[in-house]
Structure formats: structure tokens, C-alpha cells
Image (cartoon, rainbow, N blue to C red; front, side, top):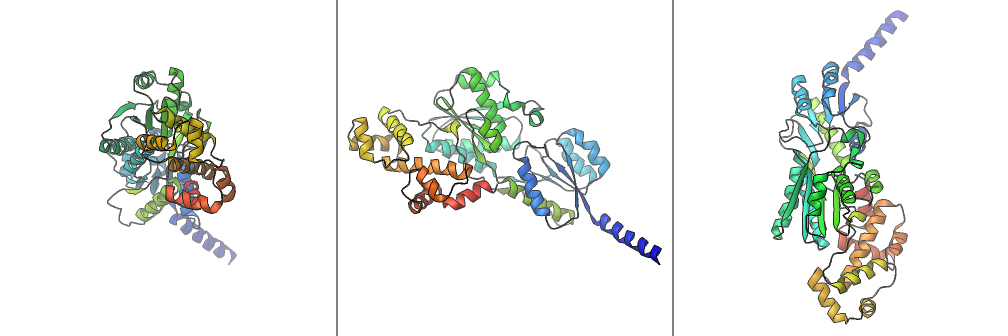
Length: 402
């Protein structure tokens, strides 16, 4: 009797194991925002235990392991056509979150790249840059689409955009050689462009290459060249010199949605006909774009005064008196140069300071209000929402929950 019970228990256990799904996770470990993709996947799988996950790196060396392991599904950074073809060979669904391949047979779950580029262009236009450039990774769909969105906005403003396509070494994602890599051709290209120059990098690693190349070429960032990346890998961006401004992606949400789609496809549900794309998050501004652009010396000096005195009860009349110009004359210059009044620029500078504190600290709303130059938290909330389109709390939640 005891023997029969033992056999029965093993049979139940074997049935449970057979019901589990083998899922290959294709990610570079601890690179960029890929741990956030995996956090989203983990969030989706919390509460059920039928996924058996195996981690592999996204190069062709993973193919023999995939063929041997015979997964039921694949999710991750599908960076080579060979890995994409392996899914077809295995007849299993693949969900891609990288969007590098021009011809991609996998279901894509990612960000709206054209909106990323549009956001970058508008960010620089708001700061009154007149010269623009884009630097992307050659042969990657995400770079092409981000450039398209960036250039389209500039084209509508009758502004041209210079372009540089670079081909990073294959080892960059694994070894982080982008931290020290420089590109002599890139440096010469940057040196020959008009200044001040706003450069949109298709991703943070490309942004780091630009910063390194500028340093080696003696180009001052952000005084001569302002650099904006994408992904907002906080560690990578804040250890850069100067710290790199970046557009965050909703990486956790992408990971969660990608896992949900893979689960549905493994259950033989219909695959979506179109890619699933999510909007980017608001720009996180850091020192690499912290430049005040104005051809008028009075406006430039006024902007410097505003930045240096955010926490003071700064009034327009005080600025005009300090610069020894009439308030009316200074207002006219601001309208001509920046299309806004002086007081609006004061509010904008305070909101930008608050955005940084909301994204990078756990300070309370009242403390952030004071440190950003607002008289109280209520006033801070009203002005911030009018400028950013979110309440301070909603903005903090948005940029933290990526």
C-alpha cells in the first residue's frame, strides 16, 4: 500500500513538471536597462510557477543551447537574424524587446521610437538650439526610427540635421568598452559642425562614445556640444563626465507586456498582427545638456542669474536692475530670443530643477518645492503641472516605475 502511494505521488509530480514551459531569456546580464526588462518579466510571472527560465546572452553562441534545450518560447534581445531564425526552426514563439533587426520575424514589444526622436527634438528646441545632429548605430531599426522622428520635427521648423552612423565593436554590450571608446571620425565630424550644437544619440552607449570623443577632441560639453541619450541607465548616465541627459523607456512595462504576449502565444492564442509599442517617459535632464543658449548677451546673463538664484525670491525688476537695462527692453529681448517672458523662464528653470530632484531623490514635496525656489508645495504643484503636464507625484511615479 505504501509503495502504491509513493508511485502515485511521483506520477502527480511528473505531470506537474510536464506542464511547465521552458522559457529562454536572451539578455546581456547587467547591461543598460535590461535588468528592468527582466524585472517586468518577473512581475508578470509572480504568482504562477509553470515557467522554467534559462538565461542566455544575445549572440549566436546561444543557438546551440537553444537547440539542445528546446524551449517552448523565447523572449529578450533578439540582436541577430540567426537567433530569430532559430525560433522558426524550433517552431516556438519569440518576443523581441530590442528592435535592432531591420527584417524582424519576431513579435516586437517595445517603445515608440519615432516619439522618442520627436521628444528629443522638442527638448532641444525648447532650449533654443539652432544647430542639430544625430548619431546612431548603423543598421539598427531603433536608431533609424529615432532619427526619423527627430528629423521630422526639425524639418517642420525648416531646420536641417547632420547625421553620423557608427558601428560599435561587437564586444561593447558585454564589456562596457563604450565607457572608454572614442571614435576619431566622430570627433572630426563633431569638430567641424557649427556650435552650439545639440546632438541626439540613439542610445546611452552611443551618448557615452560621443562624450569620450568630445573630451579627446577638446570639445566642451555642454558649452559647445550638448548630448542627449536614450534608455536612462542611471548608473551609466550619472557616472559619465559630465552626467548624461537621457530619455527613459518604460522598460518594466515592456518586460511585463512581452511576458504576457509570450504566455498567450505559448497557449496557442493568436499572435498580434502589429508590434506593441509604448510611449517614452519624460526626459531626465543632467549636465550634458545644461546649457543656456542665447545670442543676446543680456538674455544670456539674465538666464545665468536665474539659474544661480533659483532659491531666492527673484523678481524680473531685480534682474533688469542688475543688468542695468530697462525691464521693457529686457522683456522684448526675451520675447525675441526665447519666445517667452522673463517670469516664464524663471518658472521653467525651477520646474527643471524640480524634475531632477523628483527623479533622483526621495525628498518630500515640501522640501523639493523650497530647493527649487517655490514659496510652498501648493504653488509648486500648480506650476509644475502646468509646465510638465503631470503633478509632481505623478511625474516621480512615472520616471521611477520604468
